[in-house]
Amino acid sequence: MAQRQLPPETLPQVLVLRPPSVFKAVEEEFSKKFQFLKAWESPLPIHLFLSSHARHVTALLCSGISPVTADILQQLPSVRLIVTTSAGLNHIDLLECRVRGISVANAGDVFSEDVADTAVGLFIDVLRKITSADRYVRGGSWAVNGDYPLGSKLGGKRVGIVGYGNIGSKVAKRLEAFGCIISYNSRKKKPSVSYPYYQNVCELAANNDCLIVCCALTDQTHHMINKQVMRALGKEGVIVNIARGAIIDEQEMVRLLVEGQLKGVGLDVFENEPNVPKELFGLDNVVLSPHRAVFTEESFRDLFDLVVGNLEAFFANKPLLTPVMDG
Amino acid sequence: MEAIGLLMACPMSSYLEEELDKRFNLFRFWNFPQKQEFLKENRNIIRAVVGNAGAGADAELIDSLPKLEIVANYSVGLDKVDLVKCKEKGIKVTNTPDVLTDDVADLAIGLIIATLRRICACDRYVRSGAWKKGDFKLTTKFTGKSVGIIGLGRIGSAIAKRAEAFNCPISYYSRTEKRDTKYKYYPTVVDLASNCQILVVACPLTEETRHIINRQVIDSLGPKGVLINIGRGPHVDEPELVSALVDGRLGGAGLDVFENEPEVPKELFSLDNVVLLPHVGSGTVETRKAMADLVIGNLEAHFMNKPLLTPVV
Image 1: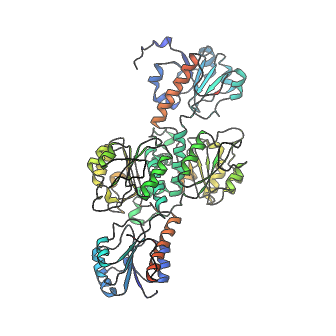
Image 2: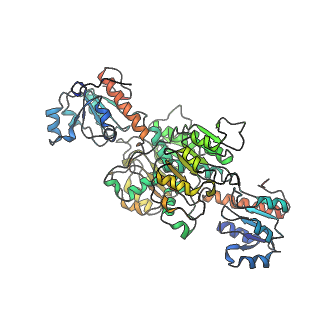
Image 3: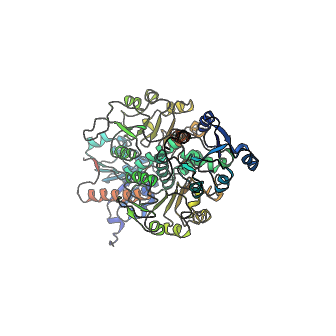
């Protein structure tokens, strides 16, 4: 569809504090539709930049690498919309947005399938030792040391989904096809969901062989997977985390792994990315992923369309595509 | 039954060895460097052979064992057993169907995700410290990709069922079209490969299916296509596959089997778009025990003149 290319000055302005990954990937295409005010390119300290260049700006594009705090919002009296390229919202002061009447739109369901696929992929990997066996073969050990140690069957494993939302529900649907027995914990029981519900995560852990963490990071879920929960899961327990590192007490988890008190873990997220506890590097029952659960070419294309869609709707005074908060 | 001579073709399971040791006069073939001598000496004692994916009962072995009554396999694949010869001589053959179907299907999906989403490469990336310097690149989505399956038997069907949970359209190639299935049939492997993004080998290895994945099929699958092999190494023309992967003419491969195990082409070791596994399709504690119990059960049934549990027809 050919469009007349508008001169940059006439395009609506959008503030970006630091460039989200998708922005870096498709900046040229983004720039055909919007004029970006790029805070990170200025030598000025952020507050000075904002107060001198951004007081008129009505829309802000952000991601997890650029937290939107009350302080930042203080410098942006005209902002009416924040679009984040993530599904997660833990980097945005939502209370402040509500007070100021600022709308917030996120990535909606754009990543859910990819994240669910990664969760299942990590789960199969931990139980069937895929990455460690691949390492074994590449190291030349198969010919020298013989067969690789046996893994553990997926069918019949009891899997507890922590947080039954867009992602959790897709994980459940996939794992059912492998013969896993699904149950879940969520803030509230979901009446339309037929899987058994557990009121608290500890009870979920006590009644399952594996936990897959799919919930949002909030004050309530910070370190929710703690020593008590992991002990309840037990020595044969498997944990997969594709949500946020801080939902798990990482130090405690590492300690349990080193002591052989967990069967294995698959982690796409960590408390202090890109730092990963080095004790994990020596373990074969751990699969590590650099926060890539959402990053496929296909989801980036979908995300681009969604971000553009939300921004265009805003500037045309139309309803947002994926609002999480309507100011 | 302790007097009955049983020959185990190669090491396969210490649990199975122990249990067979209790019940039979067990000979471990790999402990005899002079195999011809050994066979001559014991030709009249050995009435059973236990084989697996690595070694079984070929024509030569069968001819050396005139008292052979049964070949019990610790595998579902029968490519290491000369079935024609067994039929000629009235030797019974058993294998281990069904008990390993789920494990192999699970692994096929695990390989697909690991290959498309670069799970092993990502793990290497983190462990090497590279994450501190920059993000890993974009990978390829699995959900919704078209999956083509060669062989829609027990394992092929189980793979299809799992892939459907990822909203993948399923198509297949089989010797004959299956009447009672909703999946799309292609009459040739090249047709199938041209019309899917992920091609999975899930058929038995026979003379007809040797090198069923050849240059033409690989070209049809193409630079965005991925090959998954959980069948047998010889299903694939391995040098052609390696060359296609190195050249970038094939998008990726997830391989559990190779033409000459445990040898794996070293050119593959430096590629991020391949996953290499040491033949672990049925490799879980639970399933290997079930397989072993089935082997024991078949042997006991035979020597007690009871119906075999899982005879190969």
